Image 1 (cartoon, helix red, strand yellow):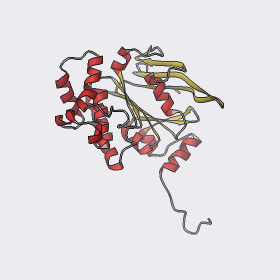
Image 2: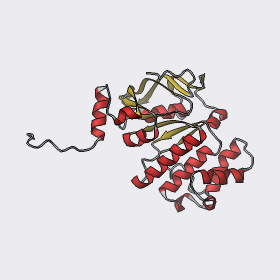
Image 3: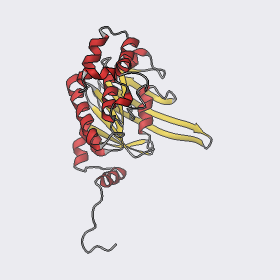
Image 4: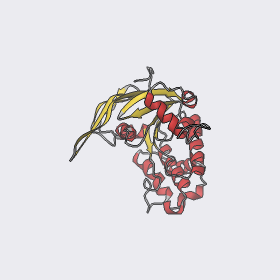
Length: 263
């Protein structure tokens, strides 16, 4: 189920992932294909255990044991990613506290990718990155435990942006945050995508989150993508697949039974 983008920024072709355990082989991802156009945003949504995070980890090179192909600008990338790959592709993780070193100040967290990739003018770049995510420059001297959850996630986003990537892989970037903070982070990500022409691939179980940030949504169930829809189609509940329809119905929340209905 691949979107027809001849010049796709990100493409997965027949992605297949299996895990070995004492119980045998778990087939986590089954022949998944999709494409994201330059500057586009695709969201992969599904319940826990459907394989969506496994797809993202395969794309990021965190899981190299996959079959099929991962392509960026139609060039297949090796399973063991090199430094040039991470210069173009960055990932924002679910838990902003776990993804930041607890004993390093924000300045050290942000300077590390600059040093690895050989960027100059580090102090200016750190200030610009903090400004871009809505944090004052004084935050460079704070430790993660001195920050709120939303502030930590802003630092994590700044770290991913500071080497000027083309693609962000977003692993449920708001699920660990309070509802009031979620909207702030989503609006920040939406603005950054527009301003910088970024390409997003996001996974989540939350339809409201993904419909706010993404143009297209791929519904995943049992390791497969069962349907692709536009965000507008999601809002209009225009699903064709039975599982997608039930997922959309469940996402609307509780609806009281009609008056007089038999329980």
